[in-house]
Length: 516
Image (cartoon, rainbow, N blue to C red; front, side):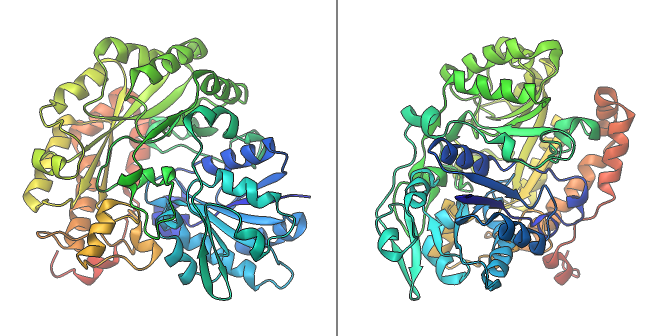
């Protein structure tokens, strides 16, 4: 008997509009993979239903549940962007509601993900289809839940780290710890790659972000994403990533209370890379928020990857803060390890704004020099910016765009600022009674319904208009196209031109056409 089905929802079209068909990534469900392997190591039998990768309809998913008859249904609601835990709630709730309508399906439904970690009680009260909310990453709570032969109220009350409903009342149990650093290898012991669907070979239903593959389709699949660490030591106001470390039963989780990092061993990471390489996967994302932060952790991994990167086949991308980019000698080793893209959080050209969002005191870092050092090491830069941060004006946004064109990086990504549930910005907006999104799609960066957090200078439609217009302008520039053609060739340039034909539409802009 299947003990638990981990279900990944499909909300791609609402989240990415026309970009969903080809240009957005399809990420392997990292947390579903880790939870499945963790449960399997404890003697339970899991399965994974990835509705996004298989493009399953709700009815097709329900048929599979009826066929396999899992004891418990666990929706794992994360995604490829930090906002996905909230935006993917739309597809998850839709499917869970349809499951509840099926009289033959009596399983309890649990949700794990950043949105429900941030707002467990509110979400349980709002969504009648959810029976159980996991308050943090859910590892130990899930193990203890699956030990129960019957999911009765008396048993649920004994399971720490969950919230559940009974007779229209929400019960929140005692805290459950997240996996401690010393137990990472044992209690989160890998990825259940064999449980994923595929067409012809493992992981071929997954595809990397377009830029990660140098804008060439054939490099996008097969694709995998793994982690070498969890969490982040910083407290950026726009970020909710540290909810993964939540260790209390607060009704409103605020990520900056849980800023810490946990690491797997080098041998664990090497073992996972060996498995992926053996499966024929070379395009890989290291999902850590801060991979290039602490040399104590990342240098041994780099040395291990250098040994594995036979014939320079690996195509890896990682994140870094702009002020933690290592020196040129280490950058050469990083490239030798197969890391071809470095995603940098630059956020804003304005020093005051960067400090205001708690990004750290890197105002004296010379961004141009850092980017040049990276590119001199034959590593491409994906530069990330945010429009509409506290203190942003049309002038500071144009300064940020001007910086980005001066840098002329091969990857460019800009988000409108969103008060994501779990972020300090969200909590501050609640306290100040600011207008916040009400629907899940309104938290998306790319959807028609997107609602940015307004500041004292900019309306939501202005932020979106600046972001979308600058996206078009950046990729249409002659200097960018020349750089792309020189580095990646004509096919990459043609694919970028195809991407630009997809026009993202916004309700706020449509409603304010006369003001834009």
